[in-house]
Image 1 (tube, helix red, strand yellow):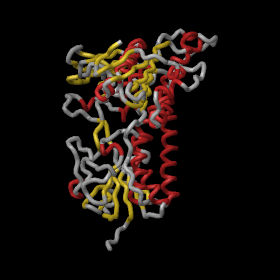
Image 2 (image 1 turned 90 degrees about the vertical axis):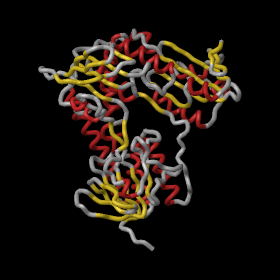
Image 3 (image 1 turned 180 degrees about the vertical axis):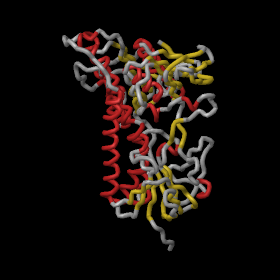
Image 4 (image 1 turned 30 degrees about the horizontal axis):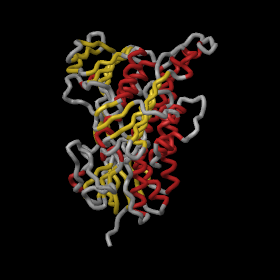
Length: 463
């Protein structure tokens, strides 16, 4: 029988890697985990967590304005960017410590180094040059923002990584992209008082979301003062004598700003990882190809999270890690379930969604019932704010099953989590109808829409 240095070696200290390493170690396995940057991965260090903190910070502008409608007199307001950055850093450092503490308490060996594969069961630790062996290897190295190397002047631009730690808050910014990262940062910077322009090559922002959510958010953002340029793109970026940047666009000429941010998707961190030497196959985007149980083409090597480019969400990586543990160490073959994943866009207002969009459902089902409500939220009646909440149910008329729920409005992400349970349980529109409303809440609309707003038959809107 072959003898290995470790039962499990994990490359990558993000959510998926840490979970698989910690639980395996707690089961008595000899585990080592290597991370070349900071433990916590994209989510904790330069993703979900700092982003949500910055979203909170950017919302206070509207909170102060709304307060006056409720009788409050709000005095002088100032914002300190460096103070926010420092507070963010303190929090993510705390969380990073918790990640490492959990690993240490479980008995895992924590390594602060880049690790690369040199063969099917061998790993080289770059800092020391040492080579170690492992019976099983988990690759959970995540991804990074697309650098867009083909763009002249791309080196002058920032990505979401740098956006959290800018030395000073810019007075103006151009953000290229139309996905959730671009949209969220556009709202963050605008809320902090930055003149913000979003430029996107598609016809509408958030390409894979329901059309009502996309249009509703677009309108709300423009109403706030965010400039959105669709069906356009940046062709080059140059630095001016005054230090500002000029972005030459295809349709809108030259745009000048203090910063240009590229939010044009993410790619897996597989370059230089030694995958070829280990016999691990990747696709055309560099993502590791895995089967239904996260197994790669190389025996004993597994891949989890964003590096597989399946669903790029932190809870998905954690779920895949737990499925790996069940399959490999508990004798319970478990395939990750990627169906009906609830998700949120922390724009302002938020989008919360689970299930199929109207467009996707129309391609799958012959007859749909669409229930749609658009209304001014109760808080806005006194604050004077004019933005609207939109709630939408997509129902398969054949069996009355709710196949999609989409919400644009405050706290939509919180609602989406609970609705994810509802749809996962297979609830029907009749289940919604016999559920008592909680009044006064925005979500009562979901259980009081008794008649379809319209139907979609064979892909065509009717009635």
